[in-house]
Length: 123
Image (cartoon, rainbow, N blue to C red; front, side):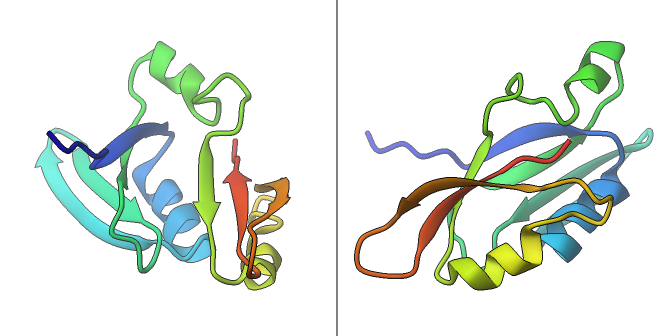
């Protein structure tokens, strides 16, 4: 039986703030933004051109969820993004609008091209 990860959820402070970061800053595609009522939304994004897993942006409600925003993995790198033009994306991503670094570079260039794997971390 073949399996794949269709999407994964991350907690965010605010849907619109998260959409601004992922869509406007990172250039991701907004796949869905559906109002579920009761101040809840089903918001999904994915890197442009990707057919892989999407990211479900889940607004933190409880104190425990709020504490996880920006610290999904306890300070470890969280998302690894492969790109076809490392320097183009690096120049766009190196600093987020709030002035904090938003790009952590893994250091290993893929063989045979200018593709590089990056870990995005934003808090």
